[in-house]
Image (cartoon, rainbow, N blue to C red):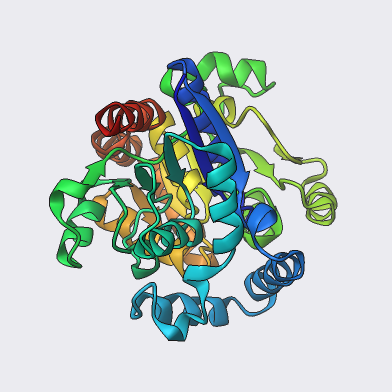
Length: 372
């Protein structure tokens, strides 16, 4: 049985969601998948804690600072001394992990373990095939390093940008971002609305802000929907943010809007929605594409989310609101013009890749067979 090590990181939920989807696809093909959080397992515990606290604080209190760091990082090689040793974080422990587990292949779904693997290879250490899965709809320098066998990217446009930055085309596979298997099948929208207690006499707007909803602008979206001149049903997903959930419930009391906390069955919610209003997290975009749910992007954070947003607008798969007034105008336009929503769905169908996890698992196991 082939053994595949999947290296992830718990910075946001998207990397871990991708890792779980890949593990499931590998298991379905008879492989053993071992998912490891690189920072928890390989980095010093103090570094792990401090880096998580710093990342969360920047996103909540100084998102512009994170955006600046992201843009500066894109101008640097992944092994530049100006990255302060990021390409060596946890290298010794990862080497020991590889020795102990002896995987037949390694999949990385976060930039840091990807470049640490490359750093280990540069020392002359024999390594199994290494494939990195880029979980955003962008090319960024910190994902790129010598010795990575294959890059799995979200879309053709992203692949072309990797080539433009010097990565050989034969090392790039356009696979999409891996999503859970339930996104590969269709769900009837009317049945989904009935199952969720929604009615058919008004459009449904779904609003999300990631697993920690407080990083989005859900109260803004709620207020816009509450003042809409048309009857609208809304489902606002606060994720694991209990304080935000309480705020949203107070705001929406007595209205046709519903505030909920963390939801596992996102697929059914997306099937029920006529429009999804969200910030542009990579996994959220991938899931919305797989579900063919029209997108209105609002409140995206500087850094990768703004880059994802730029990709989505250029690809014609999403509307983008810059402020609250623009948000209200775009919601009104989208809900009053079925042709616009149909156009978005048509563009989404050209970009959706719901079987990405299976495709990447196939590629990985083919590389294992070739390597043997």
